[in-house]
Length: 431
Image 1: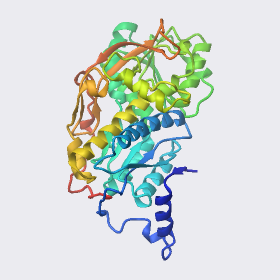
Image 2: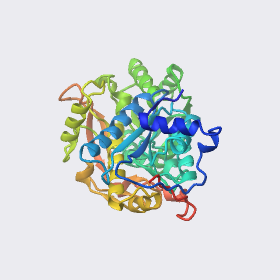
Image 3: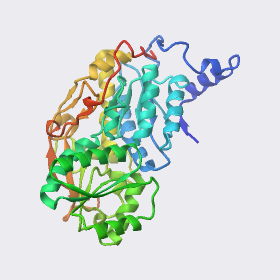
Image 4: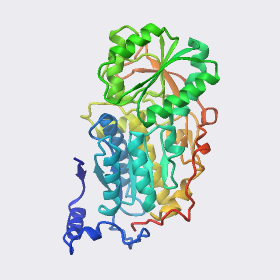
């Protein structure tokens, strides 16, 4: 069941609607162009679509800490346009059908101005379709399937994580040259895993790799013995894995138990911090990509970690990782755009975001980032990392070995992305 946190005021407003002459007719908008009178005492509402259950529950809650941290900092500084920012959260359960229901309710019953969140790419796609139907600006903070800024792009949707193609371009070319040409591919059998595996395969083969075997892994796999035995028998130079969430944790443990963690070489497309935190330093093997690490030597990183720890002193994950980081910088940029355009009008905000350049120092990365105007994906620094042989403390799992500038690993999403026109995108402003 979806969970919701809201305020007493919004609960009473929703209850009044539900009790009006049958109620149901008022849950949806009379038309898509909805404008209410704005006033300084009316909050700006952001719908948070973060998982609290399912495959990506840990990542969903890590993401939520980042988004809520950004919102709290704006509220402590006086809000935006003199208005408080208010959040409504619902659990999307790592389930696309739930994502659809949540997005519909957020827009039609909770009257949110914006939607933010999603880890699993199928969920993000579902939310994006609903958001485009009404014109509600949606920030997909952490879904990294290439399809999210490719064939499933939308005028209202902005994709904040690096995608599988970015990570593959950053890592696969050098992996062929460093470790060898015989590759074994494994991937989670849903949209992110499928599309990320395809991107990895394309880059690897373009650089001379030969694919020995390719195995789709059902979501929820807990016994990896049969797959790992196939890897032992195939004797590849490289195993390229596009596996995420709880499946990734289980896989890593069993790879280590079978002593396959050093040979063959492992290339994990992307390593989300919540998927590795708590497993111990020796669980980190292979080479993998990330967009951020708490020990990056860049302006602002140490202060961001300090503020996170002060705000969340009892959180199990006691330092922020890439998922929390993505949620934070995404919401911060959304609220800055609202402040700049002076309203919550969707089309004004979309135009302010398209092509937007974000400075490296401000984003706590090594290179400037840009929101691609043709696909709405944030093209940003991608870091390659490996396990840290000399950790400075118990949280220092990664050793960053390189950083790739956005242009060198830019995704080709515009091949498949066809953004709706401004005229075909409904006007949406909750006032």
